[in-house]
Image 1 (cartoon, rainbow, N blue to C red):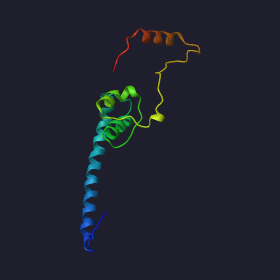
Image 2: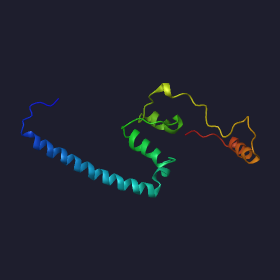
Image 3: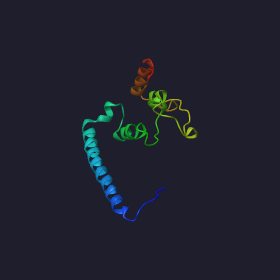
Image 4: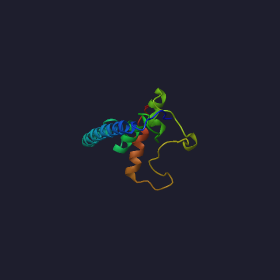
Length: 127
C-alpha cells in the first residue's frame, strides 16, 4: 500500500518508471541477441533438448523459478532429486509405462523388427 505521497511526487515516480522501462529495453535487446546466437549454435542440443522452445521453457523459465513446465519424469529426475524442481499438479501426471516403438498388433516390417530386436539387446541405462 502506498502512503504519504505528495502531489509533487508524480514527476519523480514518472522518471523512475521511465528509467525502469529503459533498462528493460536494454535487457530485452541483449536477450534477443543472445537468443539469435543460441539459435545459430544450436545451444539446446548441447544441453540435451530436442528443440529451442524446450530449452527456453525448461532452462530459462522453469529452472529459473518463473513458471511451471511439463516433462517426462525421466527427463527431470536429477532436478527433482536435487530440489531444483518440485512436482505439482499430480492429478494431471498419470504414470507412464514407457515409450513404444510400434503397435504389436499390427504388421511389422523386417527393418522395424531388426531395429526393435537391436534395441532389446541394448542394456538399459540409468539416467
